[in-house]
Length: 341
Length: 155
Image (cartoon, rainbow over all chains, first blue to last red; front, side, top):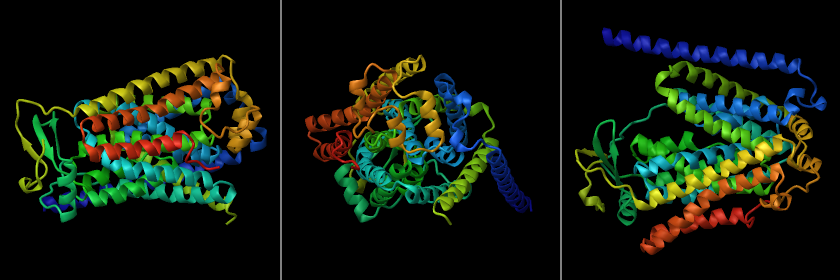
């Protein structure tokens, strides 16, 4: 009886949470629609206060710092927060936002990877193996982004990104299953052959349990296929790939969660470097816009990591889900308008 | 620690040990190199940002922000600064030491961090005669160099 009551209560809580998120999403969309209706027409330019370089830099620094803090507290990547929100709620050209989003994700990952490699939590051999498909397809995605430009391209990109954001939100709500130590007792013959050749097994010291954790990845072939897809999405949309990499490594390849999370961070730094150069060469990185955003997001993730244990993260997660849902809906509607539908 | 698959029955396994496992040296090397280069790049970016804010800039901020907010494309925004849309990542060299050019220098340094790190990994595995890992590191490095040099780009 107690168990049945607990299950019923858990379902009620989930339903209540989903309803609150929907309500918040509707409120955000309505609020933005009202603001848009009273907005100064685009041909009159940006608000006067933003035209001062100092104010412009500080404004975007503060906005991206808040994004970084919220992203860490909600357990989602900064790149996944930055690109959809900027594309959904600002009139800035999407190609510039995507290039900047990729730079932001890359720079943050490069800086954050050092302690994980020093402690041996991140597996450098596994990183080299997964970096090959991820980097190649991230570059292909970035080059495709350069080819798909113009009104129809913008429309398609926005619809695709909006759909992807809604899928990410759905994964975030319904499939949040992450296993700290996924148990693997069988390896298929292909995985065995790859493992015997590459020897990707590793060990690391887990401080929380005061033990050495030894692991061997499995389903390498699945990981390689998934990383092609994740790399392409990352390069095309300027999102960091962490939202997909962690489940791919954790659930797909059977790695401990900490190893999956740290490897994904470093892999973003490796793969997105190649993709970001494609955007740099195409002139998509505007210096005065890119730098405050990059520094802001990195600052935000550092602050977020420090306050994470002291803050109730559930409410922040719900708010972020609502904001992402709203930006996903806005992206799709903007895209449809651009395609004159 | 090399383990054959026949020896591995379950993953993960936990065991007590007084000695913590040594992290692989190439991982530490890669982490240190990328971190310090990226940090240096960020310092240059901040310096460039201060120079831009104080008025020593290339792209007029007021016009840039207006064009940005109007949703204009990159070609239009660069043109208003009387710069032909850069088709490579090194346009800033002839505009140094203007603020925007210094920022771009910093961004270039950050974007070089992983490339230099990967070069080190490649050389390390070559020296250690880990041929498969040397090959993988070299493949990733070649892809990075192709985009960095503009060999792979949209024309």
